[in-house]
Length: 299
Image (tube, rainbow, N blue to C red; front, side, top):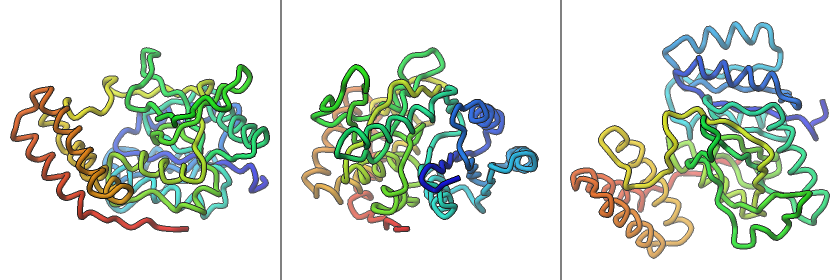
């Protein structure tokens, strides 16, 4: 397989072996099956390791990377992309262990990103799918962010709006983007690692949204990320998200950008009557984010 079209799928997993098997089954049905399927295991304690090692014996394309400890989605995607880059892949399809691609999902992403580059004097930094929830509606947490001139190249034949931020649920990233911009930030642990990374690589040129590439995301409910939704159970994730986005905003726009972000978070929490004891912890996470300067690793 030529390096110019060698594709690696990178799936990060933790204690969801039943769903992971469904992801692998969906990859087996792809019209453009990845040449490498890399499973990054965040030290699962269920039967994930046994299932993956058994499956790998019958599938030469399957690679199983078990991490010594749980480093979160951010650490897993960092390790996975670094390993797949070392395997010489030219495209990296990144997704989650509970997201099931339709049979032509990866083929449509590859077609769109290569056709766009051939048709225009630009090369997209990534291509992302339409992510649907289990009932077929748009999955709110995986909605990409359009740029101001998103319809610039949209036609009936090539309906691919420009976007500058996407989730790590069915996003295709070319090798050149990793070479130029480095790897995802592992120290984020969870939340905002995908937004930071896609925005970082989009500095070269925006990505494209490919609506004909469809993935079903099997999450418990269909909700976006809004600080008005915080409760005791979800607080730990929102704290990571607040710290990480604050760090990003300080890096990219300085303290003025951080203040604007903090004001928006405060308004969301106050408007939803989030208990003050939870609000204080989010404010503390924002303060931590001001001095949080994680390193970006180059390849």
